[in-house]
Image 1 (cartoon, rainbow, N blue to C red):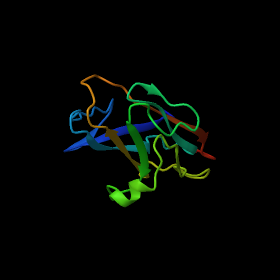
Image 2: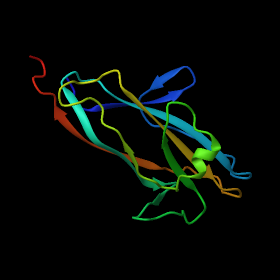
Image 3: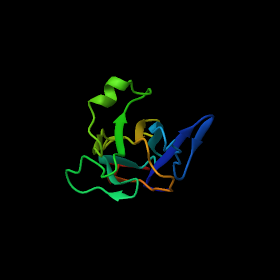
Image 4: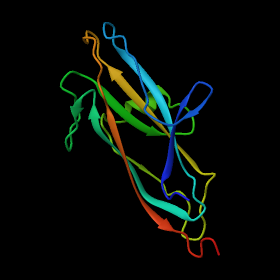
Length: 150
C-alpha cells in the first residue's frame, strides 16, 4: 500500500490524476479557477505538516516573498469545500503558501478525509500567445499509525 497522498483535479464530471491545463484570453485577460482534491489512500498512515507551495507562475520562478509576477500573472491558493467567493480571494496574496490540517491521526488513518484546494490563475490583458507553465509543490510528513494493520 502506498504511503503517498492522492492528488486529483476536479473537471466537469469527475476527478482526474495528472496535470491541470488552463486557457486564457490573452487579449482581454481574465481568471480561471480549478480545484484539486488531496486525500489518503492508505489505512496505515497519517499525514502532518501538509503544505502547498507555489514554485513557478507562468514560467517565472517564485522566490521567497515574491508577490508579483513581472508580467502581471498571479496564482492564488485557498482551501474550501465550495468554490470560494471573490471576497475570499481578495484577502489572499499571490504566490501564497497554503498550510492544510492533518489527514488522519496517530491512532487512526482516514481515507475519507478530503482536502479541496482551489487554484486561481490570473492572466493580464494584452498577453502574447504562449505556452506557459506554473508549478506547485506539495510537501508533507508521512507517519505510521500506531498499531496499524494489527
